[in-house]
Image (cartoon, rainbow over the protein chains, first blue to last red):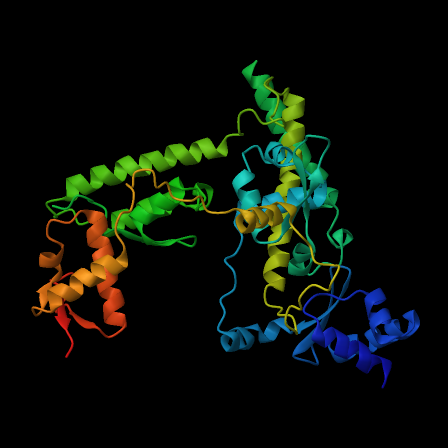
Length: 187
Length: 236
């Protein structure tokens, strides 16, 4: 059996992403053979050539349906997609992703509003999880989950653009001017 | 005029679909988060559904304004940081420099949220190839809190019901079975007639005796309708 076949079979049987290490241990292949097999599968399961694609998410690999076939798959399954997240939920996720792990209070401070309800909803959806207390007798720290990485198609936190790159320096300068200028006018 | 004026008003929201009254109940019981309920949409739905020519229009409007105002108040309170939180923001007002810094940080988070929304939308249409396998032995994640709760449920015993209010039982099923059989020797008898003058305990034991005799084929119980008169008939 060719290495690509073994890796393909393991990935096909798993709903969760499988790491290189687990692929090697379950197939008995060497790290190089796994790498070579993944390259072959990535070509075979590219979005242009197949209805099934190889995704590199949450620190592993996963076979999934091609997004362009989603309508047919969802009609077949007869399942509605979960309701999209609210703008507040996206903000909370962004806080935890970039500044986390954070307590609920810290999230609320960054956003300027109480975020406990949104956090609860995100925990229920498996996108956030408590990672233990921030200190003895302290509030729990929250972090993003593997499910979050899968849902965003990210292999790790490093897959996201740096926070500093998302806002240009000129925009920040305008914010400063507005606040400090208004403050000056008020004096 | 009904006692519940808004009982016919139903709402269709992303987070909830059904009677407005139930929506209020779910919010009050904290099973639905007020934060996720778009109040402006709720008002729009009410305005589109109201009939100004209805004789109850004023009463319905008053009722809705009252409950919607309470929801606005509740939601506005939810938006405020919780008092007594160990991580609560400091009371002192921020300096302009600090405020500008915070707004800059928040602007970055807003942009990051937009990036996340795009990624979540783009990846929502990927469906994994296989079913979710059960966790492997030794890798099962156990929630200690849920385990403790389950253990309490399993090992806790229901309390025995108090029986102090019951007097001493001085009659047996056999005695009352003999009484029934003696009455049936004269023909069919109604349960009411049979138990006339008996206290509740003897009536209950008589019923148990009748069931027992019917079960062993010594008599037939006839009751034309549920909760109707019960007649005991001798079998040939």
